[in-house]
Each structure stands twice: as C-alpha cells, then as structure tokens.
Length: 372
Image 1 (cartoon, rainbow, N blue to C red):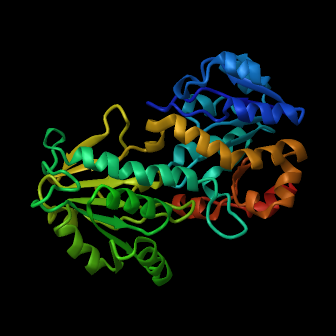
Image 2: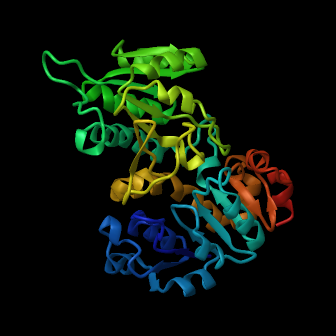
Image 3: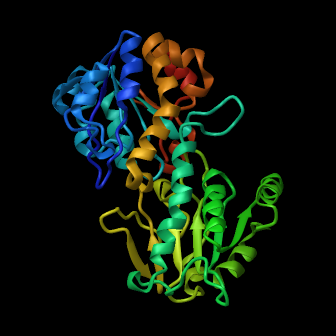
C-alpha cells in the first residue's frame, strides 16, 4: 500500500496524521509512506526525522494522486476534498452530521471514508475518539479558566479561589470521557464541580472516582436550568456517536446566567450543545452573546498538537496497519468495529445518524463493504 499523510490546513491545526514512529512501523510492514514536506512542523517532527523513518517527502498534489490511503487528523477541507478520488481511502476525523457540504463532496468523490470518531471497541466506547476527548476535556477547563479573566470578558474570577474567597462553580454536562477529564482538571484546580448525566451507572462511577469531591446530578431540563443560573462556567461534554449534538442549553436559559459567565462547548464538532454556539478558531476563540463568554474552538486538541498527535497515533495506528496489511475491503469485512467507522463508501452514505441529521438516503456499511 501507498500511505500518504498531508500537512493539515485547517486554521491553527498543527497535528499530523502520522508521527515518524508510525511511519517506521508502516515501512517495517512493507508499505510506502508519503509525507508532505513540512507536515510535522507543528509537533516538532522535522522532514529529516520522517526521511530517517523511511518516508518519502513530497508535495500535496503528488501525495493525493499516489496514495491508496490518505491519513489525516481533521476533516478534509474543500480543496482537499477535490483531490480525493474513487478507489482511494480516507482515514481521519469527519464529524459529518453538522456538515452537509463535506458529506456531499465525499459522496461525490467516490472515495471510501472511515471516520475515527465512529470506530467502536469490543468492550464498548469509541477508542479513536477517546484520546482526543481526554485532551479536549482537560483543555476545556484550562480554556474556560482563562476566559473567566476580566480581560477576556469573564467574571474576573480565579477558578480555584483563594483562602477566604469561594472558588468558581463549574457545571459539566455529560459524564463521558470528556466530562470526566474536565471534572478531573476542575477539581485539581480547586473548583466547585457538578456533573450531570442521565445514566445512574455513570453518576455512581463518578462518585466513586472522585470520592465525593464532585457533586453528581441526574440530568433533567429543570435541573440543568436551575444549575446554569448560578454557574460561573458550564462545559458542554455531550456526545451522541456520529450524530448532531442536542441543543441542551437554550438561549432562554443562557439569558438567566450571570454576566461574564463562561460556556465551553466541546461538542462543537458535532454542532454544539448550546443553542448560541458557533464554531470558533484558536486564532479567534471566544465571543460574547447574551452577556456570556463562549469558547467554541472546533479543533481544541490542535492547540497542544504534540501531545494530541502522539495520543491519537497510539490509537489509530493498529487499525491503519490492518487496513494496509489486509487491504481495505478485507479489513472492513473482518472487523465489525472498524466497519462501524465507515461513513461514506464509493458514492454512498453508510452511517445512519448522518443520514438522519441531513435527510439523506443511506445503505448499511455491511452492504457497502460487499460492493467494494
């Protein structure tokens, strides 16, 4: 197989699909690896390091023209989507549900598109999304604490307070991987933390994990409405795999929040869980609406690109090796969990949640793989 990893071109995205160490693994299995010149600069991986690992350095046009599998991090931008072709496989995060333009372009390309965020694991969960959820959860508190500063429009509060001054109240909506990592960071910084979730098992696990340092609340519309009124920071950490995020905090609820309070929408890749959310960038990360500071950066882990890239490669490389060693069709046929990552195949949409979000026709992944 010829495997190519281009330089990411989304605003302030510094991660890269393959580390030099991953290149070495692929080359050791007999595959040819193409790396776009300068692709690893954001993580401190030089072209020389990639060459020493066995990669060939090339330009982006040659990479897309030659590669059997294109390995990225973020969803392909419009110019990248035009370079995809029938018979080629794209392996990256896609987050299609809130992005009809990308969905249409990928269908039109004829490529086979595997989304990291919908690949499953034998024991449950989303193993290729998990490392970035861990990073984003921890970063959400870091970013929110900064946004609470007066110069950013916030309530002029220190997250953990000081002796004699109360800490900030942090509400985390969702007790999954993002929510638990956010709670961990917030507790570590001395905040007053409450986590909402609809699963009793999740709430019990969080209670055990934090030994009573985190309050847990069963999530209802009434409970959420009451809690946001006194919150200094609200972190949206809700995920429905592959589907658009539910709008849990309405504009009316936002109007009841204290001026200068902060919301951090980690679900923004899937459309966001605050009614007032719109995607922002690391270059211009915050805006104020209804007196509340919004942090809605759509590629939050890109801000800590080195940590994120290595964490991501640890999860994505085993599946990539199977795709390359067995061939894409055979790998998808043999592994139901990898097959769950198939979102688009040879001109057909293959993920039901995306089809429902956009009102499109779709076919089951099993059927699509048979036709490859």
